[in-house]
Image 1 (cartoon, rainbow, N blue to C red):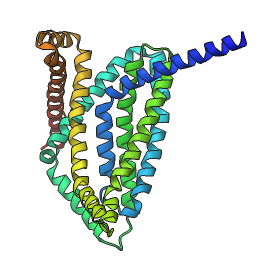
Image 2 (cartoon, one colour):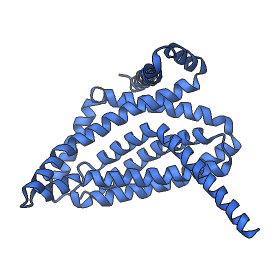
Image 3 (cartoon, rainbow, N blue to C red):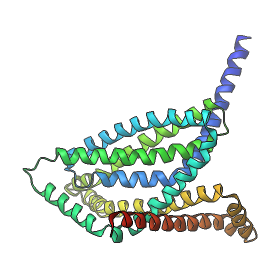
Image 4 (cartoon, helix red, strand yellow):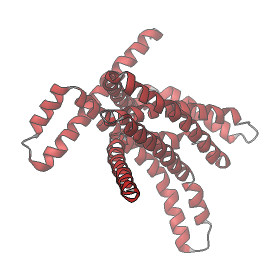
Length: 302
């Protein structure tokens, strides 16, 4: 009997882990847009920080991110348990924010060109002055990165919660914890690697081996393009994920898109809805940026 009970327990545990794995994979796919943006934004946060302080800054932001998730996961479970009707509106709000943030990134250089130029100039002056104390600048960067992480983490947790909202509370807790831990470790581990790519490139370039020098030169050439690629992929994914959330929340629109793409063949039948989700994301983002920018101009009186 004891052996049979142990086997039953092991089977239950294996089934639970398999369910968690499946639900986690689904949640991870749905949060891909936020993850891409989270990675690119956090890697950019340490731009201008002196090399010796890059990893300490990443570590400080990672600790702040972990604290953010310690707050957000119980809050998400409380909402799921006491206010389950609030999950869909929160998802829609998160999707709309993704679309807004994605479109704002596209037009940022036109909307905020003056502020961006002033910020870059101040940053260059601060870094170029060896006698200047950069602790205040570093603390501001860390606080800003943690604030940004809180927003992005809230989106990730909300999307994950929407994926597992029909599961038992223990399953919700397990998936939320797995996603929160994986996102924190994965994102900030990759950020640490990315910000040190240039150091690796310089180190290899100084070797006597021609192969090492070639690899080092390749890394130094590729590192800026990697950052740009992450930003582009993250922005595109934000439109796809955010638009998909909005489309799924508006049932007549969802049904119409699926009806229009159903007869296009297997390839376009799969790709069509994805492109439609992205188009809805871009349109929603454009409308939100226009509305919020208009409100901002009215308030400033300009």
